[in-house]
Amino acid sequence: LISTHHEMTDSEYYATYHTPDDYDDIKHGVLDDIKCLRSNAIEGANVRSYRGIEHLKTTTSSKARKLRRQIIVEAVLSEQDLQREQGHRDDNTIAKVASDLSIYSKVEASEKA
Image 1 (cartoon, rainbow, N blue to C red):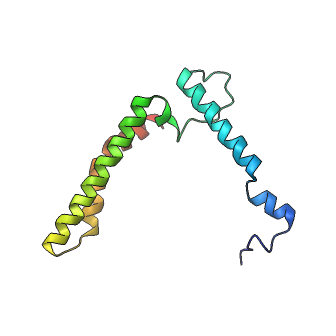
Image 2: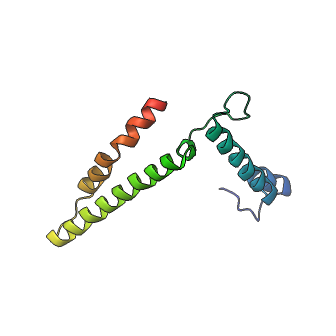
């Protein structure tokens, strides 16, 4: 069984969970990483990887990512509405709609890997 946080010793609890100070340190560290990413100051930066925040490099890339996500969500919702009107449900078709529209993101990610 997995212990709840009430059953943990103090040392187990602090080894498992972030304290508010830990969270602040992480948050400020990520903000520093984003500043380095935006200024292309990769050399000498205390950054292991930009994976997961690369979309924050510019406002244009951030807006493009948000727009792509919005298009996919709207397409999935439209497909769900269509299926509801036709009186059937096909999860595989809904998944294919999302997958087909996310191909750009997949190609971009594989190029960065």
